[in-house]
Image 1 (cartoon, rainbow, N blue to C red):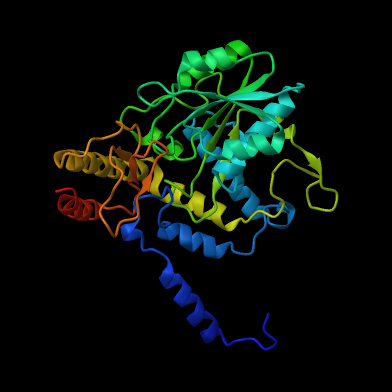
Image 2 (cartoon, rainbow, N blue to C red):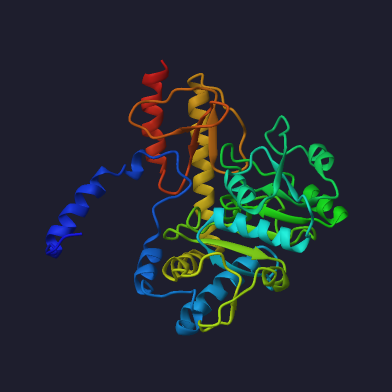
Length: 365
């Protein structure tokens, strides 16, 4: 640390140099995050100093968090859902497994997850001492239901389904998994971190939420398709009693118990998340998702016209292709199977897709 501080101009000159080293979103096709909506940025700035870890000091911000959960609960067909704003899908998934473990204590707990699950489940299970049983995928890259059934035993504490898999953009057979969970009295967590703000706005939504009796909890990330500032995740559960399984005493705070994983929790991105939901409404999100899905269709159609085969027909705005190379200058990613992967987020406009296809024509020729 410096003995004498720099001027504000000097500090920001240095920061701007570093910021210029970051990639421009106009070349990023690999991220499930996007540029925040201007209303999210404005709301974030308004709540910069707030701490939801001590809600009695910030009752207005705490009310915003409750409104965010109620808004998402209504979207997911359960206005009475409980929940809280997390740092993102990883925290939400950890918390869901903590609940599952507390709900069904057992000597050798295991959880059945799809092979397509996010790597956060590996972190969570390692932390919590839960064995992972991985169910393979079917030919359409959704979890194989019979395999899930076969992996359940008397030590199983829960099962996981994914809505919008990170690599291929698929939605697991959530209704069938919900039935399975009900039959075995298992905690069923739906990881909809990405697809949770895509699927409800499709013309023919795939059922995945609390309208299905067996669904216990849902993870969704407003900092992804919700265009909030980072970090903004949410964990929703069917009833408050599930969250209360995680309570610890907090005698010196304005609340005497809390169930969250983090202690200090920023209110700013929570306000940003709600601001976007309120500003766009269902109509705005339908238009947003329609644009992203159209760009996904166009990218798949365009690359297939160049002889690059699609790897999957996605349920959400993720496009994958059977090639291990991409045009230079573009930041894409590759799946574990080696397929090229692009995520058509709101910042990936139709113009950007066309520029990519022009470069692809030269590259794959």
